[in-house]
Length: 417
Image (cartoon, rainbow, N blue to C red; front, side, top):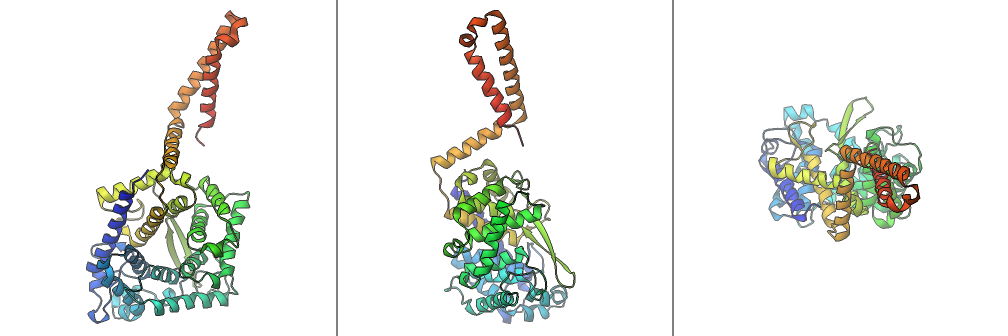
């Protein structure tokens, strides 16, 4: 089982990596001083001018949650960037060309990520009430226009059907900031979709659908207040849904992976958002089912993250490019904070972990082959003993029967699926 001090090491690394990028990166030094603003881009890159909503919101969330007084001025600067972003970036010919302000103002995921990040800012550090009200009103106005039927990806997509991914982001942001009573229908929509998935005999069609359901379960379980959630779905039902996800063909836990989801606006311009569903699953297992959190595969993922941070000073997905993603780091930070809040290092969970390790060993091909060999030898011994002394078979070969039966069970039970 991973130790708390290792989790703290990862958290400290994430906060410091983002802080250094924000404070000394070109994306901040290029902002005219009179704005008193700083920003962050999508990647932790030594010399990159890119900055925007995803990276800045991620930075606010991490630095705000860290509760380190050293970060206070930087948090204020990041908030100033969100407030004055159009004015700041329009003065920059390169960024005004690459940043599409109109799309950003209508993008539900980007609006929601900004609102979600404000929850982590201490009121003593900065007053976020005006920005929070503006973002929440934008989401709620869109919600009302759509007859309280969730959200599409963009605010002007009123004619398009509801999509579960932006609905999850909006519900997460509004709920965590105390607005559950304003979006009861949206919460019910997500709860019903989770229950439909649980009752559905057919499996999910693809990895993208799987990742969205994992994120949906994360939002409903950990972001929606219990009182609002329990009207539509119980904690036991959430646990059963987690169990079904755990056994999905898309639940790959042997290596670090995330899911890229593509979406489009009304002009068929494509956008994408990455869903690091394994990180959400780690948080869910810690919150809902300690036995699953003790799964050796989950512990191996956590140890892998720790080793990468300790030895390489980074955590990134292998196919996601050369540099670390600010947004992924912020989700990792949040997930590990949830793990810390639910951490229960006791004998029972250690037992779950050890039994998982043993079962993993027993499922290895060579172990199964040896077990099959023992079974065949035992059967041969029984037959040989019976042909010699048939009247004493039950006395003489009791041990052999036990060995053969046990071997057969090992071959059948621990066969890899």
